[in-house]
Length: 187
Image 1 (cartoon, rainbow, N blue to C red):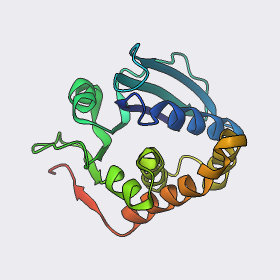
Image 2: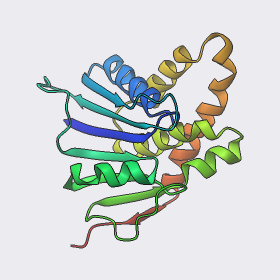
Image 3: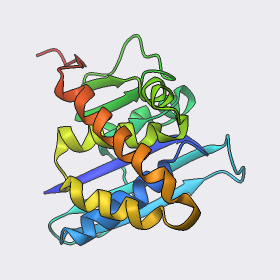
């Protein structure tokens, strides 16, 4: 099993944290992992992309040239990286910020991650909504390993954020579990 993932969004949307935690949890699960973060010089608002490869075998390059999964948190990032998907890719769109009228011929999930996170009281948790949805679909790692990594990352004065992020993860999973698949490629 090899899963090549691209996580893209604005700086401040938590794609780097999402990728780092997923990488850590996959390593704890005994998988091989490479990651390659890329972001603009802006602290918030610039483009952020995280190349992540998770595999049960050795990985020879950290760069994702064709993504098995593209998770796009905003419109400009989606437009910039949509051509990195192969025909059987999975596309997860933050439908609160990405509007694609004619999606590519891949499996597409539109998840209103920003809206769900807002309902929970913390828009920054939209990345965890997407993680919950993604991991429910792909089953890359056991959820408890990811939650352990999340808890370790949110220590000290950030400890109060753990519960809302855990809830966001659950909401993302539940959103997909309840049948919110939007489009499949034509057969």
